[in-house]
Image (cartoon, one colour):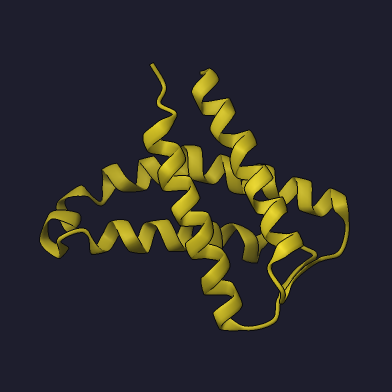
Length: 114
């Protein structure tokens, strides 16, 4: 349980850092950024592993392509659903999502629930 909570908190901090440092990503309020960070952290910590289990047969057929798509689309769905988030271009969106994916994948490998 502590690993799960730690991943949520670290994912939230990573999203806040991306909003601050990545040009082209705008959030209306600090509260929106914090809410977005918590929701993206929850999605990466809870929803993404469930999608990975559900997509396992297709993952074997596509040689890992489904894992890549799941890692990209999970944060994208959450950010698009949140009010107050604005992303100026597709390249900014892809850069932010790929950075979140890389960080989330690394966190999942380092911090595991026991």
